[in-house]
Structure formats: structure tokens, C-alpha cells
Image (cartoon, rainbow, N blue to C red; front, side, top):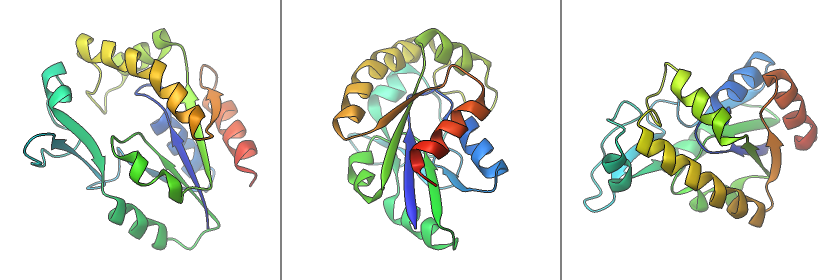
Length: 174
């Protein structure tokens, strides 16, 4: 099974790309949307504060990590007999699992674009707090460098989702 990890800061289009990949018949896992796959974990106590329904203030985000359950992720791989799996998301602990992927793709776009997307979405409150948006903007700058450093290929998502997914498929060589 070929495993492709697609990542990017909030608002770059990961969930939308996941939906389009699924619509085209590919096995796609959105780590933010898959029940029980990621949780907000208190940095000091280790207490689990649940999924994306948590209160998304700057203070909360500063005190918690968005952690992917790697064992759960690997079990999901084995539940589907397919040639390729796409995993989309961004987790604090992704350094623990990026090595299991054959290819890493980084979705990017202008901060004005991802902030507009964040404010208009209805399924997720992350980033609606203006201070958290500033954190996302600042993180986008360093995240690009980090992902390029581990060999990620970049796709600008400031275009139609169908065009983005066409690029994903081309880069994935499937």
C-alpha cells in the first residue's frame, strides 16, 4: 500500500481535498474528521480534552497539543484493502509518524485566503479566534521550511479543488 500524507496549516484545504479524493474513489483519511483519531492533550497534565469541539481560544491552543493516535491510524490503514491511502491533517506529534509515508505533500496558500476560509467554515471553530489566526499565520511561515526540510512537495491551493487534487494525484504517481 502506498501512503501519502497531505498536510498544511488550518484553512489550506485539507478537508476539502480529502472529500474530493473520496469522491473520486480514493481511500482518504482526514485526521481532523475521523472520530477518535486526534485529541487535544494538555501539555502539562497529559489529560485528554477531546476532539475539535473544544473551546478554541489562544490560551487553550497554547496549553494543548493536537495529537494523532498513531496506533489508531495504522489500524485504519489495515481496514481497507487498497493500493493507495491519503492521510490529510496536521498534528503536533506528526514527527512520530511521517516516516511511515511514501510521499508528503504540503498544501499552502496566501494567509488572506486561509483566514477567509477559516472564518467561513461551519464544521470547525479552530482559528476563528483572531489571536489563534495570528498563531496560524506565524506557524505557516515556519511550517513551510520544516516540511521542505523533510522532502515535502508543495501545492498552492488558491485554485479550484479539482485542480489541486489533479496535482495531488500527479505528484503521488498513481
